Length: 466
Ligand code: UD1
Ligand code: CA
Image 1 (cartoon, rainbow, N blue to C red):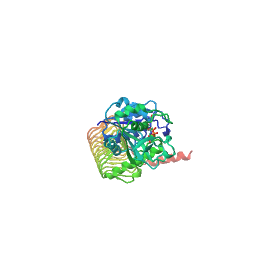
Image 2: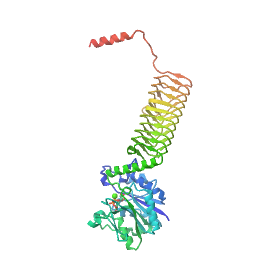
Image 3: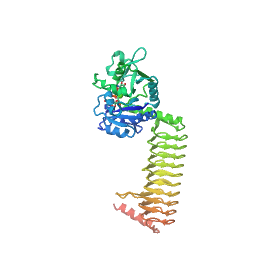
């Protein structure tokens, strides 16, 4: 049996109160991942044959987010959920199989819930199954009207409910499984004859019943998982729930998180056991972290690849790679695909941009290493700068193995310092340095014996004559 999915993501999200013209609601992010990506992620284990996303308001942005994982169709005017599904007709009409329909603004839905819904749909030989939820506060949701046997009669939108119906606490989550052929066969029977003047997808329940097809409900409890993000308060609340879910999973897998309330880890981050994450740390993107690291406090990592046994304190590291047994920080920065191999030290106020540091390099303090390669065991003194930019071009610096770079050196790229060279402190280099050479590039010191008191007397007289 083939499986399909349709994700509704055309809505504007008026309650987000944004002034941005092209910002679709489903592009708002939780832990740097757009809302609709969570829905796609939840769908993954279901191995759906084709996913269709309906985009509309801010559709170009939504399209760019989903197009690598789904087929995109446009709903140029938002005339309701039924009308949105009609736009998927060219992509799916007439196909044999089951179609799961979801909303792009429900990031907390879990794969297990969707799998259970699919299974119940198949096992009960339903042609339409609604994912319902019994919730403490049904306000705003469509209510499931059931008969005394629990059979679903219809779904009534909140704004169409009478006093009695408003008391119903079993609601429509907005997730359904349909027999695909029948879905597109009956879609045209939906009429916009309601207070909103919209095509309600939920009208299909009555239509299926009237045609004598089996309709069922798969029930879940509580409203956390089905939470739809409509405003920024719900966005913050969902972020909190997602953060807790991710942190809990990591802790149960063997990662220590000292203060989970103040640790923000993205859904795609991988951390191996026995790594300790200290408070106020954010780890996002496609970051992969090995075993026995100590990360934090106050550290930001994004798209980092980090091996085992490193210590990273109070630092901001992005798009870079760290090997093993490296000490980083406090206050270090990495960006632009820096590579730091094993047994390195990258100390306080050291910035690496596109730098490749081989094994055992030490750069302990106040240094900028940009667009350079540094060989094994080289020591980079405090205050070293690789001057890589002339206002127009970026150039590379290559420093060999076992080099000693004295403090306060400025190395003007492009330039090469060969193995085992020694650069005297305070040098400004603009020429290559040969192997084993000593490079001194600064004014020669001159000491004038007994001259100090003459200088002081001169300064004193100047002050008194003012
Ligand atoms: C819908 C359901 C309601 C259910 C609730 C669950 C209907 C008629 N009602 O109501 O029973 O309790 O979801 O959250 O279906 N969308 C489009 N195009 C449109 C309209 C909506 O793509 O023309 C998308 C939205 O972007 C959103 C989803 O469909 O992702 C749901 O639409 P929304 O307007 O939020 O529906 P609700 O009124 O919440
Ligand atoms: Ca909604």
